[in-house]
Every structure is written in C-alpha cells, then in structure tokens.
Image 1 (tube, rainbow, N blue to C red):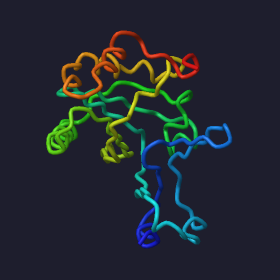
Image 2 (tube, rainbow, N blue to C red):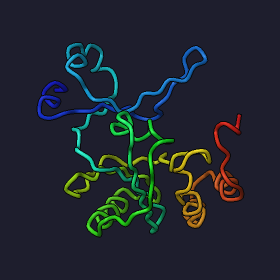
Image 3 (tube, helix red, strand yellow):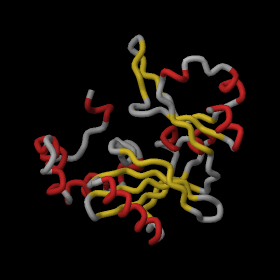
Image 4 (cartoon, rainbow, N blue to C red):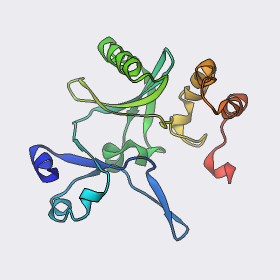
Amino acid sequence: MVREFASEAKTVTKMFGAISIVEAGERHFAHTMPLEAADLADLRGIEVTTHLFQQWARKEFEARMFVVGDEITTAAIYSHTASAYIDWRTGYDTNTYSLIDAPADVIDAVRQLMAELHLTYGALDFVIGPDGEWTFLESTRTGSSGGSKTRPAHRLPINSLTCSRKEHHEQHRDTARMDRLCARPRRSAARAR
C-alpha cells in the first residue's frame, strides 16, 4: 500500500506526536523527510507502527493558521534553506515570518472544520503553491509559533491571542496552567534549564 501510494507522486513522511526523542542523553529530531527509493526497498515492521505519508505539494511558502475560538491569525513562513524548504521547523533561525490574511474560502473551510470537530483551538498548516493555491496539510493541538524569544517567530501574537480568548480554556481542566501562561511572558527553552 505504501509503495503504491508513493508511486503516484513525490511523497514525504512525518512523525506523529513529538518530533524528538532523547537517546543516551542526546536529543534527536525526526523532521519531515522525502521518501526515497531506498526507504521503500525495506518496509519491514511498518505494519506494526503508525506513520504519516503525504504527497508533496509544490510550495512558494507555507502558512500556520492559529485558531482560538472565533479568532484566526495566519502567519506566512518563508524558508531560506534546503532543509527548511522540506520542513520549516528546521529553519527557525533562518526563516522569515509575516502576518497575512488567508483567502475567505480557506477561512470558511477552517471554521467549518473546527465546528465539525468541536474544537476551540488549532494550529493548521498549509502549503501555498506557486499558483497561489492553498493546500491543507494538517491541524495540531500542540502547534506553536516557533517557541523562544531568540527565534524570530516569537513575534507572532499566538500567546496574546490565546490569552485574550482565555474564557475558551476555562472549560478545560488545566486553567491554572492558562493563568500562568497569560500572567507572564514565556521563557525560552535555553533560559528554562
């Protein structure tokens, strides 16, 4: 089945959940990777693990759309390295970011998706092709704006947007965590250690 899917078009594979593990005290990352012929030659064990395979979408740039209640903020992500072109998360320090307005039909489809799934928060990823077409990749409940204050993406307003919609989070169990998040700026991973 995987070989058949990959034979139709260029294919990438992604991790589900956390993209890093710690082995022997060292952190290793598993970013999006193109599926090569060598990968397809030996698929032993694939039937007992969870995988995500997607057809590659040609891109001019990517976008992450943050949905918090009725508020939607979209950030364009422009990659400037070969690895970040495949997975923008490898280029936090070299990518450039800007706030953009998503097309109305994309916003409408996202609102419908969120309503059908009964979600009040989501970080949705899109590829915007050379022709301007938006291709939906996935939605994650753990998506962030790039993390730390040392990264340019930190300037995106996801924390203030989240805190301004705090009432949506009060229905969830961890209201104390939301209170802490909204009460002070996030610390970078380097300073938190």
